[in-house]
Length: 360
Image (cartoon, rainbow, N blue to C red):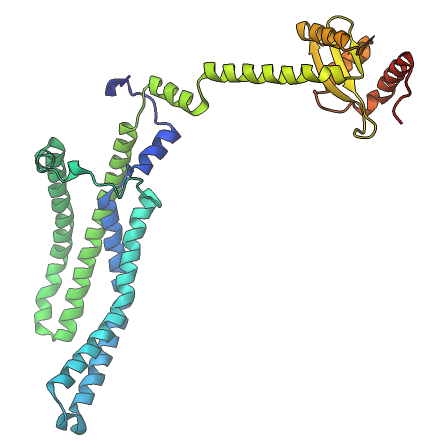
C-alpha cells in the first residue's frame, strides 16, 4: 500500500539509499563541481602560465629564426609555412596538454567527491519519457524549472557582482598605466583579471557548497520512508517470520526423524529414568569414543525408549550420566573425556548382560 508523503517521517534505510544510488539518484551539485573546476583551472594557469609563455616564446623564436635564414628564404614556400605553423601548433598542444588534463581531472574529481564511483544500472536503457515532446514541454514550464531559472539568475548576479566589485577596486590603478608601455600594462591587467576570476571562483564555491547542502537535504527528504515501508523492507530482507518458523519446524522434524532412525542401531539408552533419554553408539574400529546418536526430553525421550524396546536396545537408568550427557553433548558428538569411565562402566554392563565381549 502506497503511503503519502506526509507519512514518510523515517530516515531512509541503507538499502533504500543503495537502491537509489544504483538508479543514479544521488545528491549532486553542478554548481559545486563548476566552482571546483574553475578554481582548479585558475590554479593550474597560475602555476603553469609562466612556463607556457616562455615555451611559446622560445618556439616562435626558433621557427622564426629558421625561416629568416638565407638558405630557408631561397626555398621558402607555402608548404614550408604550413609545416612551421603545424610544428608550432604541436608545441602549443604539448605545453597546454598538462593544463587541459589537470582541468579535466579536477572536474571529474569534483563530481567523484560528491557521488563516488557511480554506475547507473539502467544507464543503457532508453527512456521514451525523456524524449517525449509533451514531457519535455511539461518539464520546461514546470514550477521546478522556473525556480531553477530564478536561482540561476541569482547566482549569476551574485558571482558577477563579486567580480564587478573586485575590478572596480582595481580601476584606480589602470589610469596611470596609460603612461607606461605594454610590458607594464599587460601584467597589471592580467593580474587584476586573475584576481577577479579568483574572487568569482570563491563566490561560486560558497554558492556551490550551499547548493550541495540543499541537494543533500532534498535527496534525504525524497528518500524518507514510512514505518510500514521499513517493516516491509525488513520482512523482505529477513524473510516472512511465519514462513521462517514453518521452515525451522520442518527442519526440526526432519532432524528428529533422522535421530529416531539411529536409535535402533544404538548400544544403550541411558535414562533419568522417565524425563530424559540419551542413546549411545560405540564402534572401536570407526570411533574414538562413544557417540550420542539421539537424545530427548519428555515426549521425545518416551519415543526413544519405545523405539529402543521395539528393537531390543538395552535401557539403563543413570540419572547423573543422563543429565550430564543431555546437557553437554549434542547429537552426533563424542562423549567428553570426563565421562569416559562412567560410560565405559555402563557399556561393560550392557555387554555382560548380552553375553558378548566389549569391543577391543
